[in-house]
Image (cartoon, rainbow, N blue to C red; front, side, top):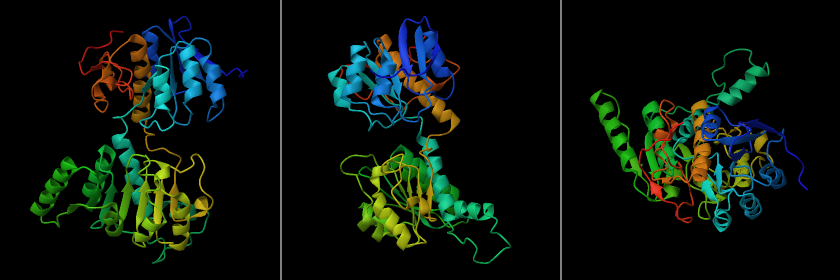
Length: 392
């Protein structure tokens, strides 16, 4: 039998029981559920990653929906337990759902929600921050100062790379990749080379317009190119940021052979998915090429790093914080809650999961819809794009 799990309860007499496996930022998500007669139970267990047994204990005998996290293993066992408890709704507080067996959810008739559309700029900002920090060796210099090693200015002390006029490479020019590219092109006047299966028309128009602006003001215009292959980006770019999805075709997309194609002083950024990079090969490459630098927000075996990575001074590593801005994390919590609430109430799925502004506007009630249900079609959910709102 699973051990009891400590919880915090809001609206104890609510008609619908909704469980959140973690405390989430903000209170709007709680208020939205409570206002619709939900009893909200928030796990307060002092444990970073809950086990399947922990979550089964949280679900209990009656549960209408669960808000979970990407660190949890949502498969056959949990969806079976949720279904037996009468639940028909689960939402990740994340845009990704690699931790979710959607086929198992379909089998038990459970809707699976996620939270896209709210992470674009925040994730792109972190990728840009890692790019600058790696180029200018900021983390190394910070550690040097804190260790009391600085005893005066020296000509060669922490010499890094100038970004202006260099080439930024983007692999995967979707919403986040394009936002990152715009930041680097406009912010640092970098040239752009990108690789994507589809033409990034809006991004190209932006770069063209910015190039014309620079030229009109007597400055060197930036350039852009859509590469014919990913290898072309790796060979030509000075800074490369990875923004692909994770599937069988992108697992270890950056491996030993592809790392060897990059410039000796190149910078590699990954804020997408950890397994996109062969981390063992990366550690070896960092060791053999001390002027090659990397900025990582995600890891192959998260939360763990491959042996040797933590010791690499030419690596910046942060704990999966790409979405960690207050506005974004509160928005993710709101969208996850509304996914669960919408399914409980029988609302249709929203037609455009990336158009989330109507759900996040705190001055108006949210639309009567589930913001993003990834298996809506499989479950036969109606898709809606109307602006009917929830009356609280």
